[in-house]
Length: 215
Image (tube, rainbow, N blue to C red; front, side):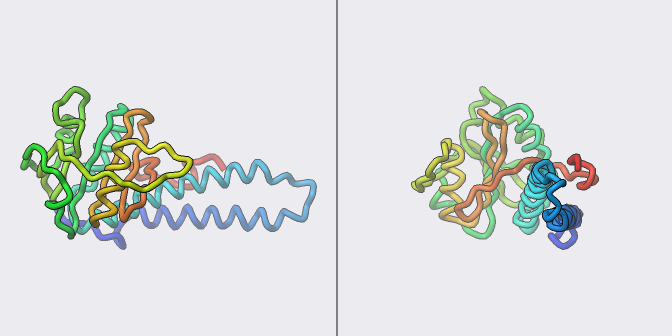
């Protein structure tokens, strides 16, 4: 399968279009601010919704950028995470990049299978003996499951961070690995990279960023 670069990613154009829409909305508000008969509060709420959509697109764009050089199965990972979010099945998926993970990851059960959304979903199905640990992805294969990751010792003031998220951040603090996380409590997804946790609101590519959110 041919790997798509970030410059070729269609989602980049969607993100640019969404940012242009936001910029135009903000410009219109700046033009209207002197008119006391125009209330901008409802516009601020709509712009906030547009920013959330832009954040979702940005998360998908950068996630694809970070993964594209190391696996050609971005779409399988996207489908899998989307289904896990819908079903609120907790998950940890580690994508190995340049750094070796041998010394920081406690090896689990060898899998050695090609990446597929259905296999990943089966691994993380509640009750499956492998579902509590992390899946390790190396290139285009699922190397192992039920791996144990190092926990982050960082203090997250004002935030409740679960064990999966601490594990994802912990590994990303020590290596260049990218870690996908799905919370079974909320059904929300995130990815950890370089010690930071970024929310993923949706991994499906919208068809029209201007009409997806009411404006």
